[in-house]
Image (cartoon, rainbow, N blue to C red; front, side):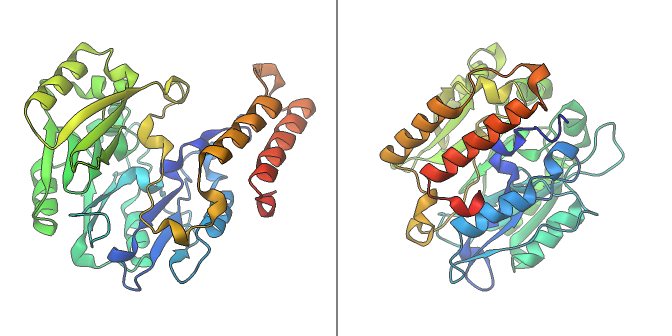
Length: 330
């Protein structure tokens, strides 16, 4: 019952893996929805996700939306995928991070799934890097790579203990992408446990118009003495990350997702995307109005599974789809 009522699809970093057009053999942007088979409450998501992706990126001249990889292999999407590039519109190197099974917690991303996605997307093997996640990080609660590492353009921001073999991982990325700039947080400054608790790396690393980068982190980072002290030292060092911006995402954090979990990065010309999926101020106001009118203020645990709440949820979703003119998804 709890699985059927999960709202975990809010974490769009697990929606799909995306390879931009400059990286692919046919010059189209390829998207593969993640099968999310490791966890019951998430394994039900991918077909709905695929339906949305096929609408948003329905122009087959520019996009290819695939089926999920077979359920024999666990795939958790962009949360275990990074892209290195000089600029977003240029060819890049795609980094796939996987876990080895056998630990106390399941390795949700299988190497076979990552390699299958790379093949589906028509990627050049010379511009793909496959790296094993540190089993200690998985044991500590980093169930996805984006809890211990994040990349943007030439920069990899990572914890010292993110990868199983740190030296080999950096060498493999440098070999495929010589312009790589690694910003590593040592365990002596921020423990793996504190990095995971605050979701320092489950951040959005974004490029600014000035050419500098900003790190959008959960507000929990500012409240941690060791994490915030390291951020201040990083900013003082004149490295590529010039701003650290705390944001309040406590409702998401309480259920295991920071800023990185709440976005799926797609490199594409907005003119090729179905305009119904593009947000502007007027559309944001319409969405806000639907939420104010149709969303329950509070849901008690005993209401889960009730016919009354089911009716409320269905009607709220229908109202949202109607205001967005997305009746195909109803």
